[in-house]
Image (cartoon, rainbow over all chains, first blue to last red):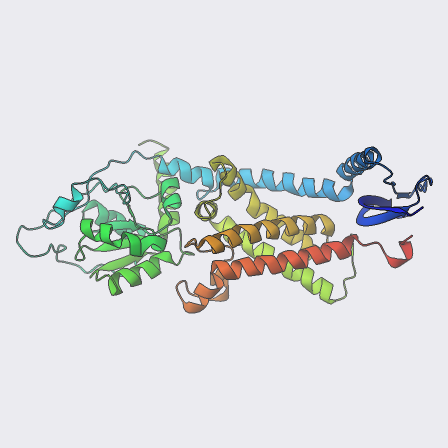
Length: 267
Length: 158
């Protein structure tokens, strides 16, 4: 009679070695022949589906007790413990960032030039803005100008941005993905995702004139988006004064955590 | 399982995988929130809590596996995780590549190589396509080493 061949999993234990090894292979066995009874080599025939099912169950049971899977589970448990402990103490952790973002934001319209005001009156779902500052420019027919005075550097730290933002001298632009913006952003920032900049620039220009000084940030100093967006906005889209905040959202998060530690969590 | 400490191509491959895992982990541990937002940018249909949990645990999993591979300790278990991690990375970056998602991989901190963000070389190494191919190659290497690690010696075969 032709031997039956079916794929299955065999378990074998090497002599004098406390390690199970798995091999996927085909077994040939004549119908009616007795399966192997070798204690160190656990093979199972496949005479019918029921027997194969029992084989699978046995293999699964043995696999759950194999040292490799136990070690892999141990590595995972260690990673979970270390990860949550690190996240609890790290100011840049996922949970810490979520706490820092839970600052109530006041939604106020962006500064407008007279020409852009009618378009800005209609709510725009695509552009998210939460600017809490207001810029007052001298009235006149010409384009609005940023206050004259000291020239701010091209690269700015959060300490510098904070002051300029409070004085209403800049518009803070978040260049990250919309999902990242929703997960957390600097209060007062406007979302202009770098990946969608060509699609959104029309809406953005309607609200933020090219004469408006911009400061762009992304996730952290590792992120290249702020630099790329600054180059694009100043070169291709004609914004006269575009700066970047290389520290990005991470720098702001660290500043918030330092501030919280200093004030003891009081507002 | 201990293998020979002699520098063979298998040892070199194991070290490469270990170094890549440690490198990737350190970059993520420097800013877990950034890694979390990078995961969100992949727009995977996963619950937010799960994504946050992955962002918290995965860097440490990478670090532990990388260190174990470099130390040649618990190698089969570490290779099993490496194979799964690189497999998942390949799928995630592959779907982002196919969907044309405008994302940076965020896998490796290229500043360690002296590359300035925004440079052309940086753009190539940070591209999703390169990340997908790199993850696929590393998954293949990890799978190959795992098969070799699990294969019984010739003398012990039936």
